[in-house]
Structure formats: structure tokens, C-alpha cells
Length: 162
Ligand SMILES: [Zn+2]
Image (cartoon, rainbow, N blue to C red; front, side):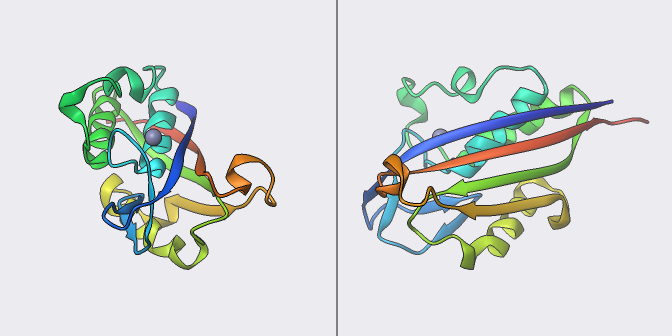
């Protein structure tokens, strides 16, 4: 039995050298940072939402509301781990994940393999089950004006059989 899900996330960009820029747990060395209540790892958020979507279990805002002061600055690996636990409870595993990062800056291409390796460790799946792509909006709209970053993720889950 298979289940498919998609997740979408957007975060604003700011210039903040003291805040890490995280994508899938990998830190890109840049003065840019994503604004957010958590550590703003937009790729982990989109993947978490895609997994929850495949399981019909709502969205990460339900589990980690941005009004909750106790989780301010939370490491998004904790968010994805919560979602992976929910997935295991439902007896599903990840078949593959395909993600597209949309932004003008920073340039993602040099880091795609490193981001994939990081995701492989966090999600405990083989790198060839993970696709990380990048594109721009051809300078159109808010993302084109370098005001933020968007990520779309799709995930396929399969029921674990014993
Ligand atoms: Zn987010």
C-alpha cells in the first residue's frame, strides 16, 4: 500500500550573519538567514509536511505552533523526528522524496549533494531515494526580488510488511 504527500513552505530572507542558514540539516555558509520561529530549516519543514500529508495527519503547524514560546528556535531535526515517529507508528516507510528549492539567493547548486547526504542521515534512507533540485522564478515576484525562499516536496510512503 502506497501513500503520496506534498509539502510547501516559504520563509523570508534576512541578512543576519549570526543566524545559520540551514537546508535539510546542512548549513550553507552565508550572511543570509531565513526568518522563522524555529531554526527555519525550510526543506525539513516541507518534507515533514509532505510525510504528514501522505499519512493524513495534518500539518506541522498543529504539532509545532509558531505561537508556542517553548519551542522558539527549535532544531527542525526534532520536528522531523516527531513526524518520522508518527510515520513508524502507522507502519509506513519512505520510498522516495523529491524536493525543489526556489530562490535567487543563495545559489543552491553547489550544495545539492551535501544537502542530500545530510537528509540521508537525518531520514535514515539511502541518498538515491532523495532528490534535491533548485530553480528560480526568473526574477518574478517576491522570491525573484530575493525576499524569501520557497520549497516544494513530494514524498511516497509504503506500508511496511512483515
Ligand atoms: Zn517553515
